[in-house]
Image (cartoon, rainbow, N blue to C red; front, side, top):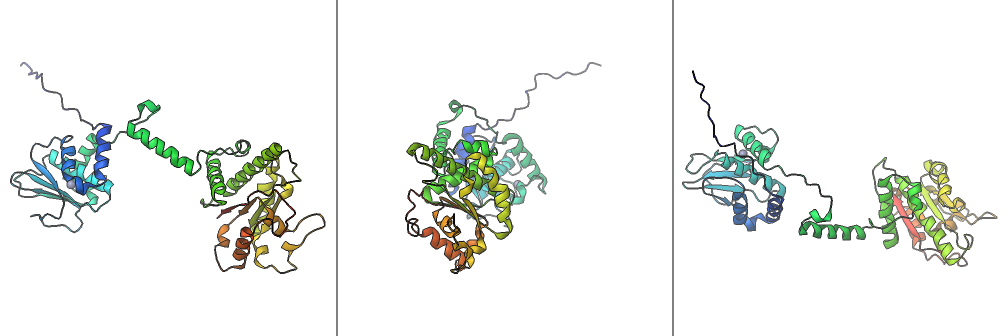
Length: 369
Ligand SMILES: [Zn+2]
């Protein structure tokens, strides 16, 4: 018996994946789909092989198909075409995904003109394992033919004009939020973690711009070390300025005050501040003051007491170039004594109480909570 060899069968059509430009245009149309139903239809028709007439309509049109409470999309067969309707009030990404799903149904012939029944979809139809057979088929079709490829670009030449425009915009925003600003080089020796240096950079940008900044990272992200990186930056900037202006450190000391909860005052001193000496931060002019010292101030309070050789904590705070409020949420209660005191102190013109000290830097206040 002679085996029958069949040759010359056309190869299975290879999936025609959309070009990046197709996706780009699809996303543009998705920004205002209600105004672009015809364009969307043409855009999808160019990519899906649907062998009959179909239109996209807003779901307000009346349909013969009984509405399903959770339905957000419908395929409604008419005599000579199929009407595709999507609830356009959903998020654009969902609408975009749903339209692909519906077109996959049409391509697969699930609903055709003249059919007695249509098909409806809910967001669950788009889940990785939808309930119904048709939806699984449509999902597989979209996965096979419409997976968005992830493009890796290594040079500017590979970018489209639109992408170049975005890069310029991002660069601009980056400058505005301070990502381009360079911390003092010493901070790189002090802080190896890029994340914490970036956070410090943002804080410095905000401090320079507004004179105050909040650091609100979660537990364990090293807020203390972001704050000390900021201290290293400003201390070294101060050294550079002294050199430029040929002044001495005693003429114009660089003061830092850390306001900390009682429970961590010694941790600040021992673990956070002590190592800063190796990075140019003058330890003699850093003080850690507990929040509670700000709460009750009477003429005999510690915070107001001068020693024979040193100014009081209150004066130190007033003269500080950088004030770090650890656990700053302790200052959020507007009526609380310590909040009032801190607010008034930091608003106070720096020359008022101790006018003989000049050359004070603009005071900066960094809060972390
Ligand atoms: Zn479906």
